[in-house]
Length: 459
Image (cartoon, rainbow, N blue to C red; front, side, top):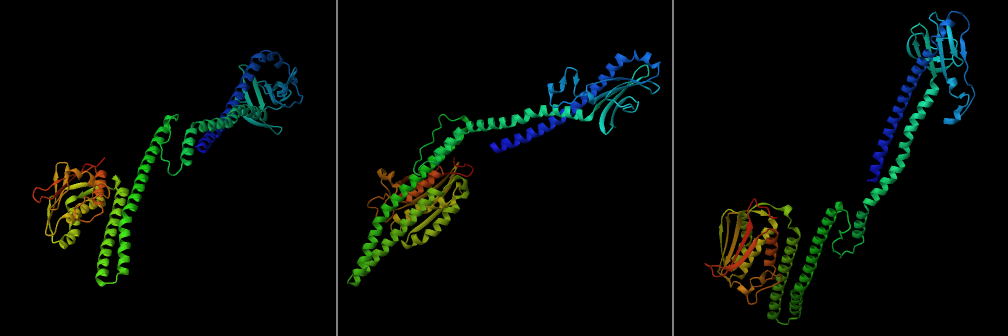
């Protein structure tokens, strides 16, 4: 910001200085031209009448003597009691109507300084450039005033430099003031950046927004909100790792025991039983790891920017088709009652929701049982219903089954206790709701999920 400000202002100052210099030269030239005219008029008014007597007697012209000393410097160094150093750079002449010179300054030549015609002219006299002005009186006499161009240029440059110098001197002062002002104004940003840069990785406390300028509050609030989200994400990761380590310890230990038993078995029956238990344990670990990964991905990837319009009935149909083999292994009947229902959400996480609900129904439904899955759209909501003829869930435990790794004792089915946790995470992200009840037709568990319909983007 400093570089841009100083660069732009420097360019503007230089441009302004150039324009001022040019304007100074122009104004000085105009002033000197006006002085020439004024000198001619003063000369005319003072000597035109007395020259009438002189014109009757031919002779040498009158010569007015000036100061011809040498002086250097400026101001008072050029002024003396008996004259001025610039006198010899000023000249005038008076000519009679018949072309005879009547009067001149000793700095003027004997020949006309310019043609005898009214107005300005730039001429070369004895190798020097002069600016002249010629004026004719009512009696027909010609009055000429002249000024050396070098003195005009010198004086004009002095005026222009006098105008330009304050601007040039003001530039470094302005740069210093801008630098100090910007440094003072951005001290709060440096404090905030230092605070963030020196923080430990685990320190997620909000930044202090007191004693900060109002312009920085928005930035600090945004950073604090980010820190809050990061703190929640890290806490979720820590909880996930702790839960995963705790839950994997038991099945992995069981797998090791069954593997050792199979290796040390002396009879085929013992070895076969150990191998069966080993395969079952590996299957349990595989399912647990799969659900842990699904839960982690659900927590991480559900973002409102990934939401889009989806057909809930088509999504349910696809997920159920993939689970028909599991239902067939238990000789179960899968009934689908799918009405058109459109939702606005994330396809992957909603697919996990449907898969977990239907898979839970299949696992807890006894052999030759029935599972019914239905969808419908009622007003501004889509409703997904999954019913089974399993043991159901007691009312006093229906709130706890959404906790991670919680399983109802005595249900008779294996699981990791993560399925409904995944469902709850998905519903929280989609502003949806879930209720557990008893199926009227199957006497088992009835799960009802409500999601916002198409056109209502979750907040």
